[in-house]
Image (cartoon, rainbow over all chains, first blue to last red):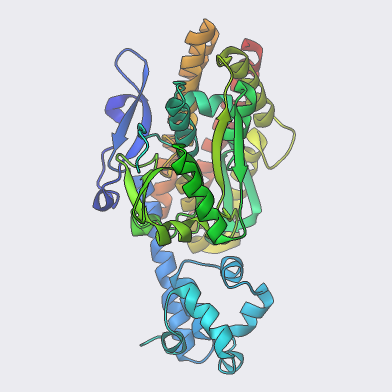
Amino acid sequence: MKKSDVPQDKSNLESANIKDMYYALDDNGNYITELSTGWNPKTIALDNAIKEIEERVENAKKRVLNNETSPVEYYMELHKMDLTILSSYVGFWKWRVKRHFKPSVFNKLKTKTLQKYADVFDITIKQLQDMNQ
Amino acid sequence: MEIKFTHKQSAHCENGVVSNLMRHNGFEVSEPMVFGIGSGLLFSYLPFLKVNHAPVFTYRVMPGLIFNRFAKRVGIKIKREKFKNLKVAKARLDEYLEKDNPVGLQVGVYNLPYFPEEYRFHFNAHNLVVYGKENNTYLISDPVMEAVTTLSDSELEKVRFAKGAFAPKGHIFCPIAFPEKLNLEKAIVKGIKRTCRDMTAPLPIVGVKAIRWVAQNIRKWPKKLGPKRANHYLGQIVRMQEEIGTGGGGFRYIYAAFLQEAGQLLKNDKLSELSEEMTAIGDQWRDFAIEASRIYKKRSDQTDAYNKVADQLLVIANKEESFFKALKKSI
């Protein structure tokens, strides 16, 4: 890729003042570095991935409201986590976290256990028990 | 206290940290040089491992490997430590800074406040340099940022003890012993040989064989996974290929820059020629990304379109196979 071909598309990098660094060729065929504001094919992929996460969060929220799952799953999705990541943060086995997704089990959890989840999600126990708070 | 430290932005965090720490200790080694000597280039496909609900595709070696190989090949010593106790981890960092030693840290990206929200995923193998401390604020040189930045002690603790895959566990590293003169020539040859070996390895999950395996799977995705997941998987490939830190084209341009520099250093014209070839291969990866983005932009499920990008990957695989065979012969 030539220096002049380094893409300068609009992207959300701008908001954080970050620029992407490319290695490209100058007019004499020597490698140099050049900053880029973004590239559309990449931006679209990222946007789609973000939308996918938002859908997962929405979906989890609905299921909490229908009493099909507990707020633990909702907050897990909200923090872009999966079962493996959440289980390593709270320090429980995966099957235990999964069990805490059951509303009946979640409603009987001890304060100590709830506090662990609340700490990981950086919220209060009240917020954990009621997503709308 | 602030240690005099020159921050230089780089494409990739690991090369950048190494290159910046080396400069601080009086050795000017470019980012592509670190990447090439550390045999950073790769392609790997791990369909049984999922990140962000899609398989793992990677264009580089495992985190930490570049620095380790580089150190071994040029003859420097690195001291590395991981911690269970948060307080001990902090004390050790402060100790280094008091002795005027800037140090490298492995951190998780998810809680890095200066990263844009959209880029904050649970990725734990980011690297940065701490070069000082003022009150409770640490001075940070993050190689993917244009300028230096800061983190409070609680922010730094959070990212140092991120959890999940590749959890950093407070990982701290610092080069402690250097040879009188770096023997780059020998190290370059070693680095190139290893990359050639990995890229042509007879295993389905690494090198050109992995590229072919991905191509084979892509053809099946629209039917097997449905348009939504198939699109998501394709997006994941492009993101891994073009994410911040790749220098474009899945690290192929950085590698081309390395070959150019190595060709001049070793006075080997063949390497300079191969550098041009690698640039062309990088361009083809970019074309593949453009074609793939057309699919997921339209959220298409047309098998024809998937077959087309799969064909592109096969062409790239063939090119890379002959390329690495030629590269092996050239040194």
